[in-house]
Each structure stands twice: as structure tokens, then as C-alpha cells.
Length: 207
Image 1 (cartoon, helix red, strand yellow):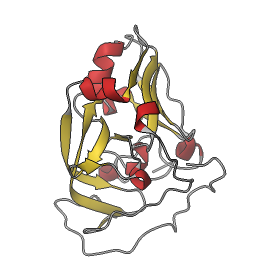
Image 2: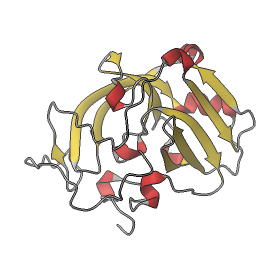
Image 3: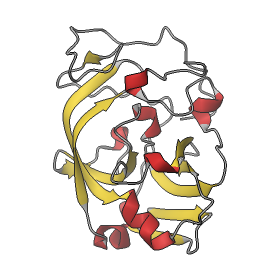
């Protein structure tokens, strides 16, 4: 999101619906068929044939994939729920792309790598523990519900880390940099929690 975006406030919440205890983390509501767009930056127009994905930093083999090269990797699908820090949750989503595990298998992380900084074509960044994007927990995705990912939801490509609040699933992702330390991204520098587990309600620094 744009660096000029003001810091989040606790008053930035959506309308609430009755809670479904088995699927809704605390403080969330079921958004139903809607999929809110809360991006605070201009939605870029990206040509997939010019998009690239790079994994660098503490890796043995820094690697960049083109659109066609990324699609040639083994693909997989996520089917499940997503949760936004602004309190909406969406049930039964379906995304497909390539697991971050596939990218890291090529780049070969160094033993000391423990964090990831995701960077987008807009300059937006977000930080994640390496453990949160490995073991089949994160993807780089280009379809939603069997169709190309819409631009306003990060198309042609976004990061998907569905077990964390959705600001961690960075739109228009283009780089994953492995680090041996935690380096805050844009929203984390402006008050959001460094990890963002919805079940622990880690919305803001200090939660």
C-alpha cells in the first residue's frame, strides 16, 4: 500500500454479522459472497508477460521466474477461509498457483534464514517468519475460483498466506527476500502486528 497511507486505527472496521464460532476467529464476521477491496493505493496495470518473481537474500541460488516459468512449476490449490484484519472473513475461497515451497526448493535457503520480506511491484512490503510460508502454508497465486485473479484483488499474482490476516497476503507480489532477522513491512511500521494470527487476534503492535 502507498507509503502516504495514514496509519490504521482501531475504528476501521466493517459491519458485523452473527459469529459462527467454529470458523470465525475472534472479532470477525462472515462477509458472505462479498470480497471487500480495501487497498489504499492505486491499482497497477500489470502485463503478466512482463511480471517476474524473484527469491533472493539468504539463499544459495537467487532465482527469478517469468510468468511462463512460474506456471511450468508444479501447481497446487488452496481451498478454505481467509480473514482480514478489518474484521471480515470469507469462507470457502479457492485459489491456485504455486506453493512457496516449490520456489524455495529451487532457491535453497541458507540455514540461518528465518524471516521473509515480501515486496510488491508498488513498493509495498510485509514481513513474515519463514515458518509461516513453508510446509504447505503459503502460495503465489494467479487464479481465484477458477478464474484469473482480479486486478483489484492483486491480479495477476498475489501472495497467499491464509492462516494469517490478509494484509500478509501481499497483492502484486514480485519478490521474496530471505533474512536472518525480522524486518518490518509497511503496515507493521505503522502499527499492525508483526505476525497477524487471526485466532490470537494479533491485529496491532502489543496485541
